[in-house]
Image 1 (cartoon, rainbow, N blue to C red):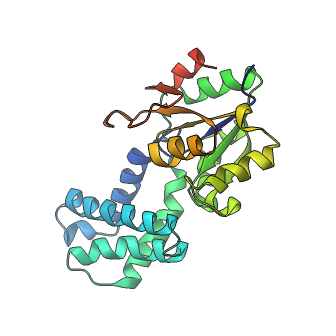
Image 2 (cartoon, rainbow, N blue to C red):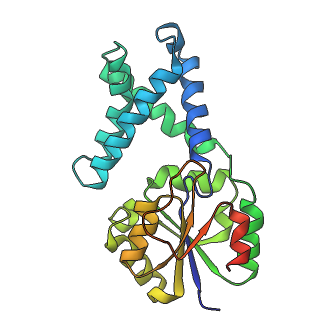
Length: 231
C-alpha cells in the first residue's frame, strides 16, 4: 500500500457546507424577524458571502484576527441594507457559531467511503482552515469523528492552508513522509495547490460548478465513492 495517511478537508468535501450554512443563516434571519426589514434574503445573503470570502482571505493572510472576522462579516452585510449596528452583527455571528455545527448534512456516501478506507487500514485525518470550536462540533454532530485519528485546524497548527507549514506540521505530527500521505479536498488553491507545493499527492474533489483545474492534480473525482477506485 503506497499511502498510509489520508488527509481529508472537511467543509465542501465531507460536510455540505453550502447547504447547511445557508439554511442556518436563513433560519436565524427569519427567527429574528429581519425578513420584515429586508425583503430579499437572497440578495442579503449574496452580500454576506461576498464579505465573508474577502474577510477569510484577509484572515488567511494574517491581516485580521479571528475575532474581527466573526464580528464584521454579518455587520457589513446588514450595513449594505441600511442596518448600521455593530452589536447586532456580533450577536448574529454568535448565534451562527452556536447553531451551524448542529447541522448534519454530509455529501453522499461519506460514511460508506470512510468505513471502507478505515477497513483498509488507512489512517484518516482532517485538515481544515475552520476554527476548533466549530469543526470539532461538526465532526461530533455528523458522527464522523470516530473515523479520524488526528484533526488539524488553522488554530492548532498555527497556519492556514495552503501555507506549506500547515502541511509540514501535519506530516511531522503523523511521523509521516510526503510519499506516505495524500490529501482529499475541494479547494484547488488551499488543498490541491498547497499539498502539491508540500510534495504531497492530491485527490481533487471537483465541485460541480468548478472550471477545469489549471494544473493537473494527482487524481480527480466527482463523488466520494470514487475513492474506492483509487485507494
